[in-house]
Structures are given as structure tokens and as C-alpha cells.
Image (cartoon, rainbow, N blue to C red):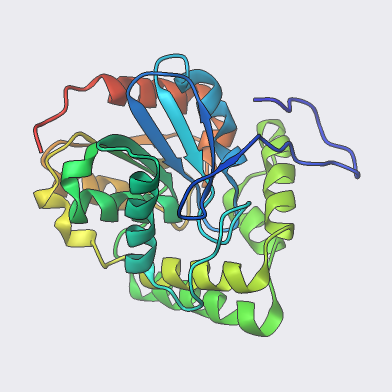
Length: 277
């Protein structure tokens, strides 16, 4: 990862060079070979994948994309749901003339990746969900819907996500600062649209997994209170070629706090022979 020291109060998050696709999506591309597309979560930017871009671009054409309304990507219409975000991803693949790809998503990006594997499986070689949600229980559903509602009334909460997503270990200090900077830079309306889609999208494609025939990796942190280990295990049990992996001692932003473990798991996933569409 480019930043490896404790940031000072004037900390500025690094920015990667971007191109703009025909559908208005901003993306960063590195490496050659079989394409791997990376989709971040709500309030983040494509830079959240930098530890994976650095390593996986040694063997693959890695394309990290800003979600709509994030980073430098054009937003979707206010009120767009998870189905619209899954549709956006297809237009992004079309804009880059990508026929079939590997796709990995984190958090809301995981919902989009899973939706893509369900709706247009002929375009997906392998799918990986990092810290993905699956059919929240009543209490969790109520909490996330209340958070979504509060954005319109109170603005973007930065402290809450940071407290949920990280512990206070040394390994988390720079990722915490990066996450805080990215959340603080979000447009409120775009954030509200994405978060509402995320809050209401956990069950939309949940039971499509038995139809997904490609290799599917589900991983999360053992301490993630919202994208729980049980959720990853449930999805893996439904998917014919699903595998669950739990990163002990980590929470929501495992790709930043445990990059070596995540990179190793993703390298292994990318080596699994794919099924025909």
C-alpha cells in the first residue's frame, strides 16, 4: 500500500490516476491478462483496493472502478435501488468492451458483484464477496434502515462507520484515517442514494446463489458485526462452488487491515478453474 505511516492532522488520502468510461464511470487500470474488476463499498473510492491492485496486477488486468456518485464517477438517479446499481455494472463492462470478467466486491460492491453473477452469469468468470451481507435479521435490518433515513436528516455520519469497521490496533490506524477521509469527501445526496440501495438490497439476490455455477469466494472478518461470518457461510453453502473464509481478528475493512491474507486468498480464487457459462 502506498501509505505506510501514521497520518498527521493534515493527512491527505492518495489519489490514483483515472480514466472515464463511456457510461461516465471513473476507473483505474493496471496490469495485463485476464480481467479482474474491483467494486468498493458505500462512501469509499477505488483507492480502497490499492493493496489488491498492487499485487493482483502482477498476474491480471486489474480494473478498479468508482461506484456511481463516488470518486469521480457520475451518479445514478436519486433513489436508485440495488437493481439499478447491478444494471450500471453491466453498462460499465459494455463501455470497456469486457466480455467476461472476474469480479470482486466489498460490502455494497459485494451486493453488486453477487447481483451480476445472478443476472448475467455469462459475463462472470469468478465472483468474490468481501464482507458481504445476506438477509439481515430483523434487528440488523431496522438498524441499517434507520441509518439510511438519518442521512437525509442529519448528514453523513463518519464516526459511526469508523467505530464499527475498525478496532484500535496499530494495523488499523492508517486504514481508519483513509476511511475517514473518503467518507468526509462524499456528496451527501449520492451517499444517501447508495446507502439506501445497500440497506434495502441484502435479500434481492440472496437466494439466486444455487444458480451461480462459477467459483464463488465469500470472506469477512471474524469481528465484523454487520457482514458477519455466518452470512458468508450461508452464501457459500448455497453456491454450488462456494467457499467461505473468515479472517480472524479483523472487522469490516479486511482488505486494508489484512491485505496479505486477502491477497493470498484472492490469488488462490483466481486460480480455480472456471465453469462454462
